[in-house]
Amino acid sequence: MRALARKFPLAALTAALLVAGCGTNVVNPVTGRTERSAMSLQQEVAAGREGHQDVLKEYTVVEDPKLQAYVSALGHKLAAQSHRAELEWHFTVLDSPEVNAFALPGGYVYITRGILAVMENEADLAGVMGHEIGHVTARHGAQRATRQQNAGFGVLAATVLGAVLESRGMSGATESLGQASQNVAAGYIASYSRDQELQADQLGAEYLSRNRYDPRHMIDVIQVLKDQELFAADQARAQGRQAPSGNSWLASHPSNDQRLQRIRDEAAQLTGGQTVDENRAAFLQAIDGMGFGDSPSQGLVRGQQFLHPTLDIALTAPAGWSLQNGAESLTVMSPQRDAALILQPVPQKAGTVHADILRAWGAEQGNTDTRTINGLKATHFSGVRRNAQGQRGNAELTLVTSAKGAVYALVYAAKDAQTLQARRAGLAQAEDSFRALSAEDRRAARPWKIALRAFPAGGFAEMAKGSVLTEAQLKLLNGRYGGEALPKTGERVKTVVAAP
Image (cartoon, rainbow, N blue to C red; front, side, top):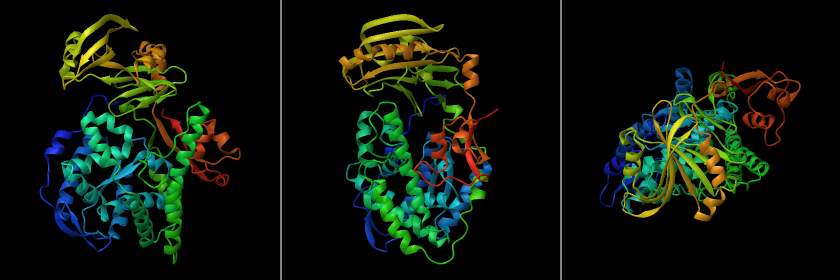
């Protein structure tokens, strides 16, 4: 959760670059075929340039010039051998723990530090970046923006919102959009077709080959996604939750099993000739010391604790409940995933008087109680609220003023009234834990960093003794979760430690 709440500028995007008419004929640089498009090649570049500014408002860029330079140099090397080498390409590392990457039309590619952490070498990273470059060269963003044109959605809005929200999965849509806009964005997110994803995989392998990397590294990239799925499923079962049915992509995307088989076939056709070294040493050196997990500027999840040193707030999830730290909110989710307490900052323009905030929020008849939570002034409301569209419905929340004077809303959410009552004890327990950071909290809130270590004779179990990660997490971090052969003793591998 950020220090200040920021909403994605949907209205501005929707108003910008609305393309009227039936579009124009454009030759696809990859296929060589003419296709009808809502965006010309020049409009793609303009959309990407404007969209890039909005991405930078939504994400924080990693403040590591050497890492940014390394990723940018690799990206430009790949793009120079792509089907659209003439574009002015831009490559940016984003300060996000998510294992992801995405692209905007016109040559804007984004890599999260989360996906950098789980790559094993430069060739694997090149596969990820080649895939995203492939989305741009094959004009996939323009193609799906063209489909959205018929729905009356702005081309730039479709292109930028789709890429950004897709990078987070469906859950990200709820952080940035109202319900009406969610429906539009959700339809757009799903519009990367199976064929487009598979084509981007194929292009990633081709760009690896053109740069003399072994194209079979695309197989390693897909395997990383499969290992993430396997780990998530194992964690869910260990916690008594239902295992996820698929990966973070929408159901319309090809499964990683399908992608793995297709890319094996493609790589087999491309493999041949001399290949360059996978450049593992240079890659590891580039990410040594890189932040891992949540960023202190957005709050840290440490087990059942949420700690935000900048905002001076903390909260503890009940046993069995999970914490989901989003860009604009923190969600404390019940084990059954049917109820949640949502922590959100109240915009500064709403003021600091609880009664005024509730009135502006639309609170009508109901019960309002003043209370104190760990020495902090709080107001609980339960009753009827009228939303901006004039619709009335039951609502419940607590406003709390932090030690720094900022106001936060703790919103109760459940699938129905019966579930809300059944989960009320857990919701109240989470709410009652809201507090200013204690000295112990601040010690636990040290950021985590990637560190390189020689692989010990005792394996990952021995490494875990000096790491903040478990043995299983270290295996996942080093590409060994799926049962791959262990590193050789003395080989440099990745671990995660708390910063001093």
